[in-house]
Length: 454
Image (cartoon, rainbow, N blue to C red; front, side, top):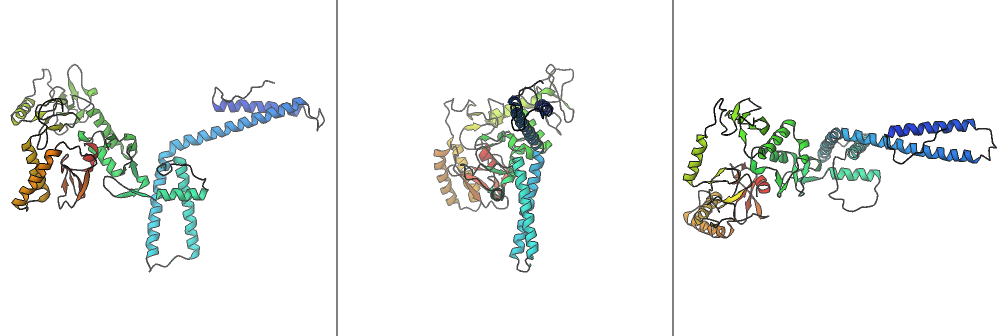
C-alpha cells in the first residue's frame, strides 16, 4: 500500500491535494476491512492503532482543505458580485429611509389611526428581516468602512447589537464641503484630507477639470483626489473624457483639430512623425501638428500668421508670455506674481521665473486699481463718493501689506449675492448660494478654486 504523507503546503492545486487524500482514506478503509476479526476486540494490535491515528489525521487535514476551498470560493463570489451587492445595499438603505419617513409622518398626524397590534408586530418583523439582509450584505461586500469612529478595540457585541450599530452608522448624515447640503454616509466620497463630498459635487469637479486645466488634477487641500474614489460613480463616457484630458494635459506641444466645429484634442499616437499630419478621431479632419491649421497636402508648413499677430499684439499691450507653455497672459490688477494654468510661476514684468529677478513684486497703480475694484464690487453703485474714497484708501493701505497673500485658512463664506449671485475671480463662474472671501486681500473664489488652484 502506497502512502502519501500530507504536507501543509502542497505544490499543486487544492483539488489535486484533496483527491490524493481521498485515495489514501479509501486505501486505509480497505486495509481496515481486510483485517477485521483477526484479533481480540479489546486488544487491537499496534499496527491497527497506528492506522486509525493516521486515518484521523488525514481526515482532519482533508476537512481543513475542504473548508479552505469553500472559503476561497465564497471570497471569489463576493469579489465578483461586490458591485451588485453594493447597489442592492444602497437601494435597501434608501427604501428603509423612505419607510421611516412615511412612518414618522403617520405617527405625527393625529388624523391617521395607529395600526392594530398584529399589524405593528408584522411591521417590526419585516424591519428585523430587512436589517438582517442589509447587515448581511454589508458584511459580505464591505461596501462601507466604519473605521472613522473605531480607534480602539472594544467588548464583543452580539449579532443583534452589531446590526443595530451598523444601522445607526448607515443613518448618519454628513455635510458636503462643497454644496453644504447633508447626505447619508454611503452617498459621499471622503478624500485623503478627510473632507467629504457628495457624489454630484465631486463628479462636477472632475468633469470641470477636463476643460479647465487649472483644476487638474482635481485636488482638495492641495492633495490630488485619486480617480479610484470617483470612477465607480462616473459613466463610461465621463470616464473616457477624463482619461483623455489626462493625456492632453501631459502633452507639452498639443495639437487640436483644425475643424472649428470640432477642435478636439488629437492624441500624439494619431500624429505621423515624418509628415506631422494629425488625424482627428472624431471628425477625420487632417491637421498640421506644427501650426494647428488644416494640413498642407504636398507642401511645407508656413509660419502661422495668426500666431505672429498674437505675439505682436501681446508686446504692444504689455502682456506677458509663460516661459513654460507659451500662453499669453494679462494682469488685470494686483501684484506681479503670475501663476499660469500649467502651474508655472513667473514675474509679469520680465517673464522670468518668480523670485529669480530684481523686479518689484507689485505696481502701486495696479494695487490702487484693485482697491477700487474691491470697493465697487462689494459696495454697489449707490455708495456716496466720500464714503467710496474712504474705503478705497483703507483697502489700498491693507493691500500694500497683503498683495502677496497666500490665503491660507483665512477664507469666510459670504452670503446674499442677489439675483446674479457671486462671481469667482479666478474661474469667472457664478455661484448663487455663497462665495469664499479672503479676510486679508478680499479675493472672492468658489470652493473648487479655493481647494484646487490656491
